[in-house]
Length: 91
Image (cartoon, rainbow, N blue to C red; front, side, top):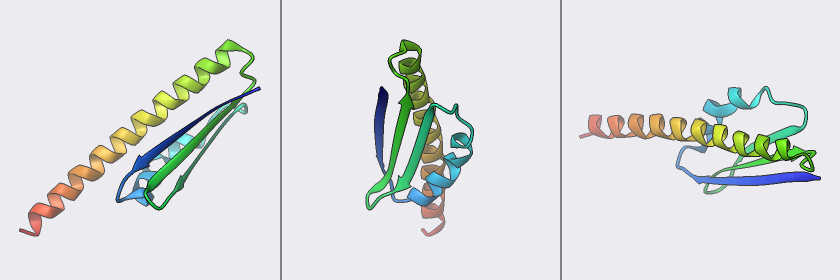
């Protein structure tokens, strides 16, 4: 049995965000699959955990979602800050 989750983020800088979170997705257990891609509105990440008949695997899904959301939040925060600094320079 598989557990699945999908996270969609709207951003003007999807490629930058994807590049910044890529190292976090390189190493994961064999039973966890994480795929993030650019969409027309931003980013879509799909997480699949195999073996969810074991309750520990459901916790793995939750923890993976938490980790991914923290990485996305940090990336978006930095990009927003850079964007606002660049906007000030244009004044």
